[in-house]
Structures are given as structure tokens and as C-alpha cells.
Image 1 (spheres, rainbow, N blue to C red):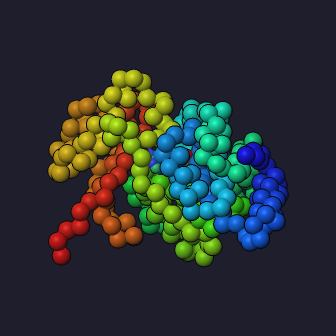
Image 2 (tube, rainbow, N blue to C red):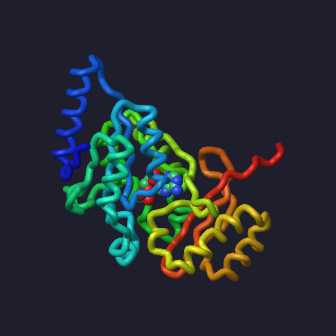
Image 3 (tube, helix red, strand yellow):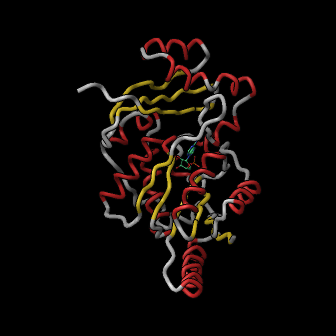
Length: 271
Ligand code: AMP
């Protein structure tokens, strides 16, 4: 596995992997790409495994993207576990890890050029995290341009993000297919998230109440009350239909400093 630390190295490395594959197999490889912010867990692993199953080569990126953080403390405290990340990647048969060593590497333009979306990005997480999705879409477009993968893999855990990335790929005629993967959960139901590493043991015990309230209580006011009582500050808890046409229940709530999000599919209403 190669670790590539600049845009130039990643481009060159990609070319070399493709040429090497051509030489040994007599055809072009298919490429699967998994962009992440590191602190890898089994959710990320599931994306890498799916990518390995469906493609000849798998590229992973690890980049804590500064432009998608609307709070400087959240960026500064984002967990970093590089050594175990690289071991996980190696184990998942990743060919190359793009690991920009400098926060500015992906922003030679100084973030003057941005991708924005005007509807879906203004709802749910977009309301409490101004600029977040603009940062996400911009960095994902840059990464997709560099990886030039056949398929890129994203988790349903961040369903609003997945919807926006799908929409961007369609709107800009990107050649990469956007593949959504199911949310991976702990045994107690808590959706895996790098930010879970920052929960205190007490908060970790309370955290699965979020998905319990979402699934066990059908009345949203009741569910919100239950979460308030458990010590969550609820940002939103709503049933919405995003442009992909499926109704889902979305929630975001903070426990102490840590913002947790989750979403589940809802049964379709009878016509
Ligand atoms: P992140 O490193 O948090 O930016 O996440 C990188 C990718 O992993 C995104 O596409 C996420 O949606 C996905 N992901 C994060 N947590 C999970 C999870 N629990 N299950 C499935 N995918 C996940």
C-alpha cells in the first residue's frame, strides 16, 4: 500500500497503478474510491470492503477538511488515529491512501471557488452548520476529480450528505457512480462515528438513546421529550422526504460537546 501526501504524488501514483494493472492484466482496472476524515472504524471498513468487492483497485483518502467545520474547536478536537487507520486500510487491501499532509494542499485557490447547493443543503444539518455542505461538496468534487474513480462510496449514516453528493454528481455530469452504503452500528444500536471517540464513558452509555427514541417512539414530540430527559440537546428530530423520494426520520442532538446524527428509513404511507 502506498501513502501519497500531495496532489502531484496522488496523480502520479494513480497513473502508475493503472499502468501497472494494464501491464499485468491486459485491460484497464476499475477503481473504487472511499473519501474519509480518518479515525477509521467499522463503518469506514464496510465502505472499503464494498469497494474492494466491486473494483480492481481501491483508493482511500484521509483528510480532515477544514472548510466543512463551522466551529474551530470541533476541527481542532477532531480525533486522529493515523497509525491504526493505515493498518485498517492495509488490511482492507487498499492500494493507495491519499493523505494530504498540508491543509492547504487541496485549496491552491484559497477556497475562492466553491460548490453550493440551494435547497437540500439549507435543511436539517445545513440550518445549524452554516457553510458545512458547501465545504463538503467542494472538497468531494476536488477529490473525485483527482481519484477519477468508477465508483465512490459514501455512508447512509450521513444521508443528507449522500443525497447532496449524488445530486452534485448528476448536476455536473461526473463520471463516477455514487454508491450509498448502509449505516454500521454498535451492538447497542449507536451509529458508528469518529466523534464517538470523544464521548465520556457516561455519555457513551446514554448515546444509544438517540436511535432508541427514533425507533421506539412514533410520536416525535414524545421522542424529543424523552431525549431532553436523558440530557440531549435536540437540534432536530423530523420526518422528511429528500429528493430521492424516500421518507426518512432524521435526528441531530448534542451530548455535552458532541453532536450526534442519525437517520432511518420510514415505511411508505399507504397511497
Ligand atoms: P467521515 O470520515 O466521517 O467523513 O466519513 C467518511 C465516510 O464514511 C462517509 O461517507 C460516511 O457517511 C461514512 N460513514 C461514517 N460512519 C459510518 C457508519 N457508521 N456506517 C456507514 N458509513 C459510515
